[in-house]
Length: 284
Ligand SMILES: [Zn+2]
Figure (cartoon, helix red, strand yellow):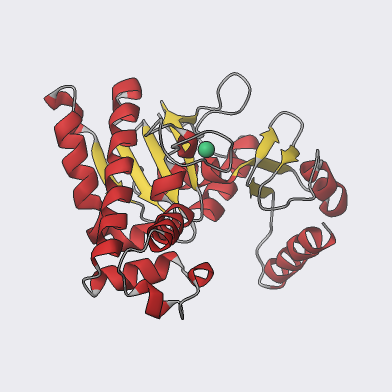
């Protein structure tokens, strides 16, 4: 915590010296968050955290208004405010990284749901008989289309004796396998890695079809490190969407890559902080 407040203080001082006045602080935090109270209930990234009042802790030290939301939600807001979704009123943003985060924007506003839990798209079931996910459910999207999911697929296949150059890449230690290795192996024609990326794409396609069926958004924005492998997994996703589309109308939803790689969350957190202060006009 000292580190977080210390970094915030440092950034404020730095901007001060440059003649920029910092007026608010926006935070995007992973995990389950009580939005009204600014409390991080639990966070997979910070195993020791339980009911941490992050917002008030920072407010107390820096004496500026602080806004806080889930990390995937701030990324979605960033893409809406300054990224791929500037010209649309409704979008769903999926952050494909270690896990899969989701943020839903309807009529220009983030949709938080009744209890602040909306947008957990990574835990949408895409295969009821699939592998167990960290959340306790089976066959979640995250278990296939995240970096962790791909590594899991590779590790299991190796355990079953499948042939792959990933053995060599990892020095015969499957614990060393990374999603980047799977990508590199696929570009070198490794059949197992190609099939893992294809499965990641198909699962994503299945999830996207459901999202479009339920909400009919103007746009689906895909962001996060995994989108670097776009050409290797998205054809399977598009194929699945085409196959399962309920009507041709569905195909009007644009499916695009985010325009703020690596910074959607930061931009969105800033935007939400400005919005909380009333400095951002409505975006519908
Ligand atoms: Zn899950």
